Image (tube, rainbow, N blue to C red; front, side, top):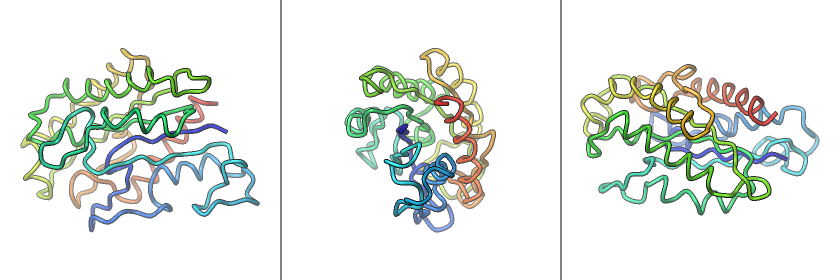
Length: 227
C-alpha cells in the first residue's frame, strides 16, 4: 500500500470558480487520481468515496488542500495560511508517506506579498526541502517529492483587488524557476500548465475538465515515480 499526500491550495481543495463552492469527490483531482490508480484493485470492497478500501487497494491518497495557502508566507489579511509552518504536523499525522505532491505558489502572487518569480519558486522549494528532511517516508526515510508549478493565471476581473497587477505575466514566468528549484533540491517536477488552463470564470481556479486532465497527468507521474 503506497500513501500519497496531495499538499496544496484551493485547486487541491477543489474550489469551483463558478460559485465558490467545493467540487465533490467525483471531480476533485486527488480523488479522481486515486480512482484511476486503484482501478481494478479489489473492486469487491469499495470505500464510501468510491475507491478501494486501503487494505485492498494499491494507493491511499490524502487530500490536503486549503484555500489561500501560501508557500511560506504569513498572510496579514487571511491569517493561518503559511504552508511551510503547517507542514510538519500534517506530514507526521499521515506517515509513512511514499510520495508528497506539492502544488503551491498561486496565492504568493497576491499584491500584498510584492512577489517575484524567484521568491515564489524558492518558497515552494523550502516546502519541498522540509518534506525531504522530515523523516516521514518509509522506515523514517525521505518521501519522494513531486514539485508542481501551478498553471498560469488568465485575465479576469474576479481577483483584481488582491492579485498583483502583473500577476498574469508573472505566473507565466514560474515554470522554469520551479523546474530549476526542483532539480536543486532533488525533487521531481511537473508543470501543471502543460495540461490545465485556468478557468475564465475567475482566472485562477479550474473547471471540472481541468481536474480530470490533471488527475490523469498525476496518475502517470505516480506510476513513474513509485512504480
